Amino acid sequence: MSKEFFGGRGVTRRRLLQGITSGGAVLAAPGLIRGAQAQAGDAIRLGAPFHRTGIGASYGRWYERTAMAALKVINDQGGINGLPVEIIVEDDGTDPKRGVEVMEKFAAEYKVDAVFGHLFSHVVAATAPRAGELKMPYFLCSEAHTLASGAFNRYCFQPSITDVKSQVSSMAPWIASNLGKKVTLIYPDFNFGYDHRDNMTAAIQAQGGQVVADIAIPPTETSFTRYMPRIPFNTDVIYHVMVGPAVLTFVKELGEHLGSKRPEIFGFIDSLEAVDMDIPQLEFLEGTYFWEAMPRYAQADQSAADRDFRAAVGVDGNGASLSDPKDVATYAHMFSVWETLFAIKQAMEMADYRGPGQKIAMMEAMESIAGFREGTEFPQGDKLFNGKTHQAFGHQNISQVTDGRLEVVHRTSIEDTLYPDECDYTQMSF
Image 1: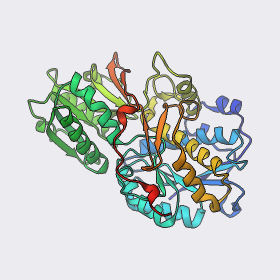
Image 2 (image 1 turned 90 degrees about the vertical axis):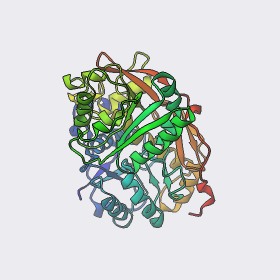
Image 3 (image 1 turned 45 degrees about the vertical axis):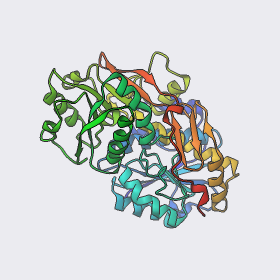
Image 4 (image 1 turned 120 degrees about the horizontal axis):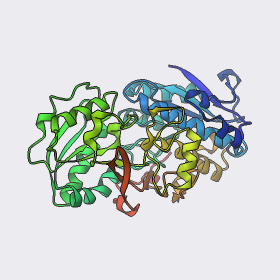
């Protein structure tokens, strides 16, 4: 497993913006700090288990790029409590076993102050229990409902991205009212997909609709034609969410199977994250709909926070790298890494955090935060944070493919995304 240490001082905001030109080069940190040189209390060290390889590699690459951009801004502002911040990156291979191994390495070898960055839910599900055993603060950049359902422990937080239950329950009324009530679900055959299956089924039933078919597909699948005939003829809406290296193949084969006489289509942008939409095979998507947490394409009413965030991570108005228009970002997800770092910063500052002796105080501070305001630190939008369930709640966007772009047609309120508490982590001991 590869490791890299990023951090240090001396990067001004002007230099940051001037340096954003392309790929990994813009992420080069101001210094490489060897493990033997690291001294307790001289810096705040954060472990980052990113998916550099495996089925989550496209997300991991952009998560890492986003984290390094946020790190530069934080250190340019003086770090946290006067201490520089360093990020130690390890590749977990998008693999549950390696995820646990990396968590153990962060605790025993690097002795980091906290860990953040996991996305894929099957890796999170394996790693979260070990984080609790190691008494390591673990900040998830994932979307699984597992944390808010009470399945983890008090050391786990999800402060800057909503979970699937929140996303689905807020959008099901719009889907049922505008697209139809007989829904076929197509989803990946692992934890994240089951979240969509279970929560969408309940949400559409609450609207008087029904799921007429659910089709689970292994995330490592490379051809999808054998699954398409399972879509019933009485389907009003195909609801799809797919992940992995073959997402473009999935969407292309879906279009080829459906032809011109198709039902309505509502997808999660996961099915096209990091995929260029401007290709002939995706023309059939015109007029279809997608969920986005943060819109890939800069909207007509683009916020200043979104504009600044794009500049900081080196992304253009189409959601692609400034240096390569074909290098499309995982824009609907990667903001969570940026925001999570600033959430950690806020909690550490509230606790006057300077080392492991204040870990519990820092986590109690995180539990006391009621939410975050939209701005440079939280560009996706306002959020509520539930200190009992350790889960954030924010706006969701429904976008329509219009002239090959995604245009937001509906934005939920935060209230639309709320649901009754299913746990109270504050009742657990540390």
